[in-house]
Length: 326
Image 1 (cartoon, rainbow, N blue to C red):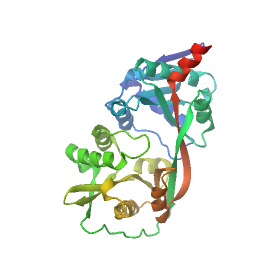
Image 2: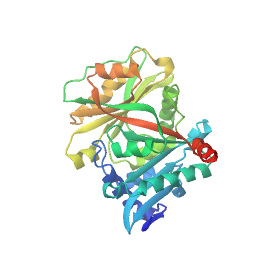
Image 3: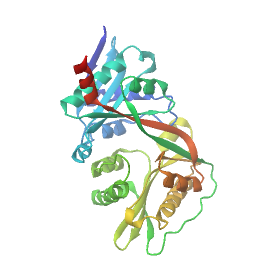
Image 4: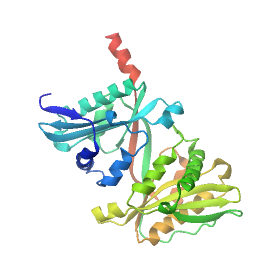
């Protein structure tokens, strides 16, 4: 395509990437413009980031799109043989072939890393992104619901069961060792979830060091250590940009051996009350669409469906097989 050029991301071109993402995702009501520190956290500070797996696309000298592939060492070590692919093109340049070229480069990069499967996501109402993925042989794998609770109605108090206590800690005040212990609980809590691979503490540490939004941990503690946790967020940067008062329950996890004791409700109640105490009037959270137990818990606290996103996967070996059979 005449006038279409690509270059790998550098620290000096981060603002170009931020501009592309902001324009391409402007219709997503839960997205906002990344800060420079957040962009660095998601790229150059990420332990798995490789600039060779990124491409800024320019069309006739104007930045038009951005592609990123993230091959996570923890997922490869767990035998997943997959990696995340994100393609963003500003609306005025969509449909001009930019997105197809970015996908081709992503697939070539994955093959050079001997990764067999590409993963990507799209909001259910994002017709452009969903069409891009499905026309390139991505298949729907699962859906995630975004749930919402609106208003400042009082959250029912759910005390922890006997033998447990709740402790709140600001994420910014947690040491690396503190965060590593929480990540251990995270990995134990979600190891039986679909397509899970153990997470690395570095990503949580990056969130502590680079995020602008207040984050608080509610820990369910027993004499034997941490049994579960809730990570809650006051979305201050989003609220300032959008003129809203929202927060998120980012993560809620309980170790398998401590489930069905009421810890999930106690943790959720505390995290929600912290958000409301910060002056927020809307709380969001995400949950697997097929996680009926979690959905039941969240609905009992007044949450309802707001929107959903779709996760897709593509087996790259099929492209090779299709080409060989022609």
